Length: 127
Image (cartoon, rainbow, N blue to C red; front, top):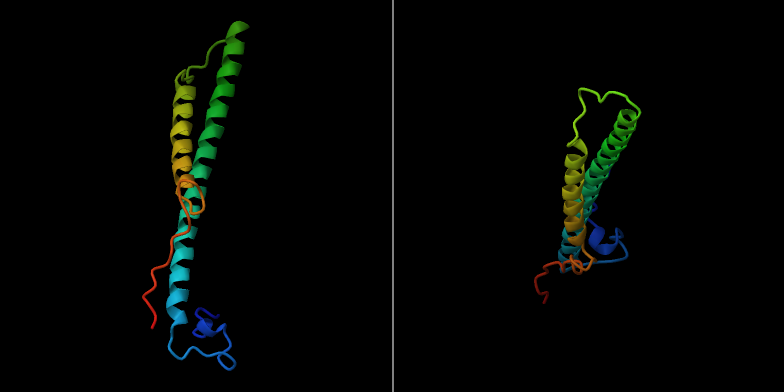
């Protein structure tokens, strides 16, 4: 298993290309750091989005249960003893918080209005 290509600065071709001053490795290191940083932000956004999606599903399930219980009650049925009339409100509140968190994390993504452009790698002057 190949983990690190030590000849990446010459495109993996150490015979036909050279980098005698070792200048390209600094640029490649900066690009790698930038890619890792952007990937982490995308991962955190996806994680927050998934959480918000799960909270929305719970809110929908609670709302549907409320509807079914109220229909039963209208037709003379009993309200279950484990029924929590605040469950839907709580799950909607949980969803709202999770959606807001996902929106914030989405706005922090490079290339978005809130996230700005991709960060420029810090590269020392060459020469």
